[in-house]
Image 1 (tube, one colour):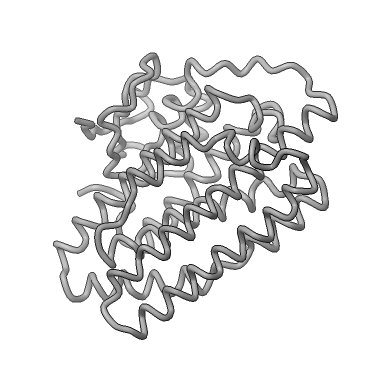
Image 2 (spheres, helix red, strand yellow; image 1 turned 120 degrees about the vertical axis):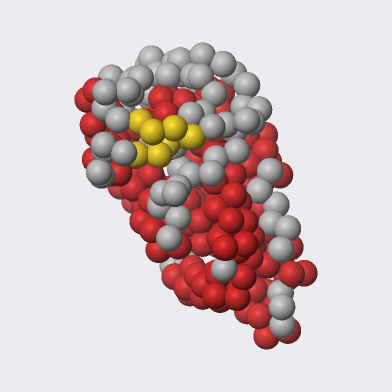
Length: 288
């Protein structure tokens, strides 16, 4: 079972420059609660059930022992890498559509079910927009969508919401990981692909606002119990997201080619910062 501990610059296990960059997102550094994920040398992901987002151990877990010695990509290799990344986003949107549809079963009222159905429909429309661009990028879009399917299936399989609250936590934290990621990588894509990504994923604000309202209502009604369940589910989601990213880096160089040298670490740090902001809005930025 994963355990929590206090980590400071004096007790950290990764190089100080990288640590300082990460800790800058999580001040004060003198008393930070972080998760100790499995040691980077192990391939096992068993027991990675995060109760809070990892900071220095998350970065270490993702990047230690993952080969980053990539050759300079040709134009053809870069186009293929972009197709694989877009294919992964397409597949993720299909999975999000399924998750949003699944959430209908737990809606407390018909009116809320209708709102949720609208969001599910929007997810599928997002998929269609991005799939159209994928068709332009490659003659074998199905292969590109399958490139990271195993890792994405593992993420969505282990983060199935069991009730309405968990469904809304997934929409507020899980779906927005995809949105944040696409916003960050947009500058590293060609103009046409970046435009398609923006059309598909740039506006989830209504969905995010709705999810936050539902979460806050659950907290007002169920108090500590709702917060405990929300904390556990949010932690599981983020832990599995880190696992997914690490697995993609271990199995393919597509992401590194698209993001360039050092780009993946920059993206991870930015994602950590944005995630922390959302946790703060839920009152879950630290463990007591």
